[in-house]
Length: 332
Image (cartoon, rainbow, N blue to C red; front, side):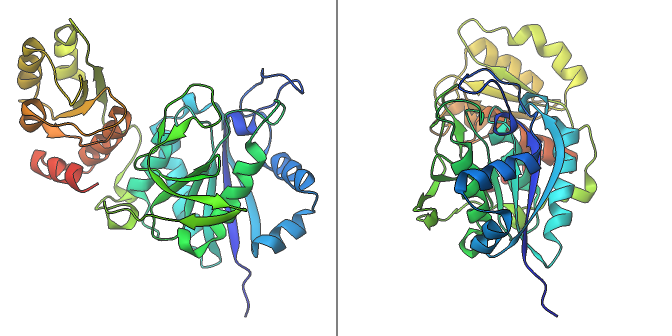
C-alpha cells in the first residue's frame, strides 16, 4: 500500500509568526497561526496548498507547540519539542521536520536537538528577522527554503540544519552576530540555496544527533542548573562563588580572548572546580579557546557559552563523570 510522504512543521512562535501594522517594523511576536502563515506563503507564491505539496512531492502537516517569543523558551519547552520531533520522525511516512521559532535563541534550540535527536532524517530550523507585515520581510523565502530542505534527501545525516537568507548552516556552529540585520546569522556554513535548490558543500566532522550517547528518555525538566559567567576587567566572580557552590551543578566561564582570566578569577574557578565542573569558553564569537586556563578546566573548543551550557546540562543530566564530560566536549 502506498503511503504518501510528509513534512511536519512545528511552530513555536517568534518573529516569523509575528504581525504588526503593514509597512511598519513594529509587531507582536508569535501571534499568527502556522495555518495562516502557510496560506500567506501559498498566496505569495501564487499557488494553492495542493500545488505546493505537489512541488515538494510531499504532504505538509502543520502543528503548533507554542506561540511565544523565543526568549521565553525554557528547558521544559525544549524537552517537549524534542519529544514531539522524535515521535514525528519515528513515523515511516515522515521524511523531515521543520521548526519555526524566533531568532534570539534559535542557536540554542537547534543545538539542543542537534545533541538529542536520534534520527538521521532532516530537522530544519528557520525563522525571520522581520515579520510578514514589515517592508522587506524575508519570511516567505526562509519558510519555503525550510520546506524544500526538509524534503531533500541530501539533508539527512547532517545533524540539525538552519536555513536563513539563502544560507544552510549547521546548528553546531551557527551564531547570531547582528541584532537586526537580515543576514544576522553566520558561521557553520554547510551550503546555500541556488534557485530554491539546496547546494551542499561541506559535511560535519564532529559527532551529532544519532551518534551522541544522550537519551531523551532519561531527561525531565528542569535540567541541572548551569551558570554562565562573563569575563571582563575587574570581574565579580568571587561575589557569586558561594551561590554557585550551593545552587548550581556547573559553570561555563566566557573568558577573555582565547579563554583567559585574571589570576584572582583563576583561583576562584579552581576552588569551584573541586565541587562542580567548570567549562572554559570565550566571550569572543569566533575561534577556539586554548592556553593554560583552558587546559586546567574543561575546554569548550569553539563552542560559545550558551551552547557550552546546554552541552554541560545534558552531560550532567546523564550523570557523566568529569572525565566523560571533558571527552564529550572534545567530540561534539
